[in-house]
Image (cartoon, rainbow, N blue to C red; front, top):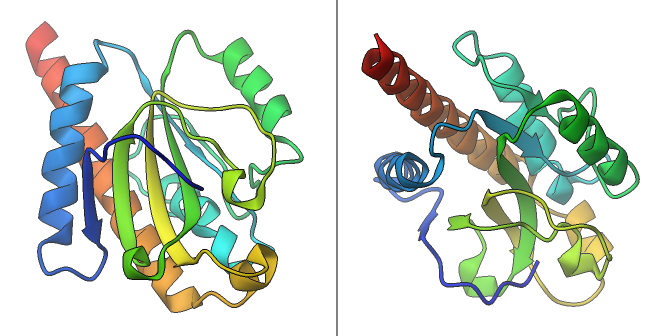
Length: 192
């Protein structure tokens, strides 16, 4: 995926302070933007390509976290990808009233940016790195740069290191769960 938006925050997943940087950035942004809307996490990707399984891995971790009480779409068991994205978006629109959608996806990037996790306001353009024409999704999005953008993208996605993708997914899912739990706790404290 190629973006021209300024980055809200980005950090390499192996940076010693990555968890703290991502937590503070996401908490600050979501506190400012959610305006009482309920969160919904939409994890995009497929389990059939190592480089594209970041979203489903994040969804898998969130679904298995006992503290997570918000809806999560896109897991290893039920991935959300280019083929079913429009159908899932219609389902979300039908079942949830004006949710604050946080979209999560993998991306290809310049070699120097591989390994970075980016948190950005606004919609995500899934499939842009593979020149797919899919609907934009989300009010906020999280991107993990999993491999270099060059040559044939599907080969790069097949040859992406699973260990790196899993580490990114664990970091993203744990920080996201913590932030949304904190926001829910603040909301309940405010109204009690």
